[in-house]
Length: 401
Image 1 (cartoon, rainbow, N blue to C red):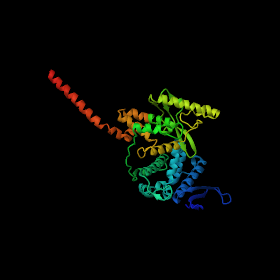
Image 2: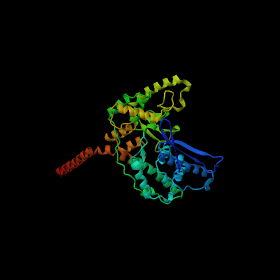
Image 3: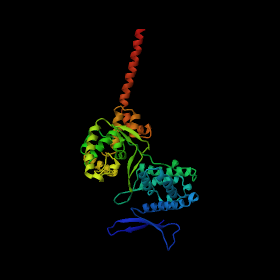
Image 4: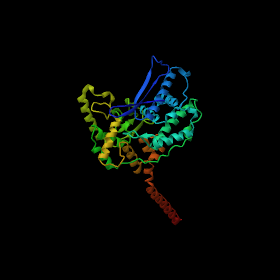
């Protein structure tokens, strides 16, 4: 499956692919072209997937009796077309497409029923050794185990669908040798560090209040950015959607678990949000009819339009580095801090899990086990207290008798 190299005068080299759609003639060729790939492997893999997608798209016009997918590339394309695009968030679909580009072209070209766990184990090993590439030179480099497992998860989901559709009988991913991922605990900032982060925030006009609400609610970035004033009842916010940024633009989608939830904000946020709303009203009067009143966003640009999630994250990460906060501190760390601090202070696991919007309490326990284990000393002391009280009551009863 040949691809082509293009070298510019500046010395930059990019790869591109080109192929004719099925059914086109030499006189009337319908070509599909895409450029801008850093490596030959990326271009080859992208071509395989795009060709498979075109075959799936053409087959769809043939109705239910259209030819079934046979190769792994065609299965992934069918999975994207029939399942992912219909049921998953746009950002998730975008990431899935990026993952497919890392899979070896020869594996994508294989008949999906002939793929064994050994084939996949070899692929996971290859990805671990040289599946990634450096940003500047684009030279191959090792890929993180978590990324490899994410790619394996995508392939596994496609095979699960293939079994459901009657195209395969087994999922070879389940018996392949997946890389082990070292468990990492969620980082937590001290209350003083969180206050300093909000007080020193620069950039978007509403960033300080945004950081306060994110820290006080434990909500995800997109969930806070999607909040409307109509979602705020007293000091309780109703979270039922999230703002997602993709290559095609911004889109509001349902929450990660697709389950709406209510989160009560602390009393200290009352004056903060009131002052924030007064300042936003000034912008509303300034922009007049051009203000995006229909969006009703609590956190927005001066004209009421949505903020760019990725830009907010980048701004906060730079701020964390400038303030000398612990390495790895970011916007998402505020969510980890919210959970860790509440658990450490004695708030029960079920309440914290509900505030975070986790699908199960077990998810919360797995991520924040360090905070739960931190209470072991208090639990041990509590046990002694219980036993001493019980023994004292026993001795008292003996004395009375």
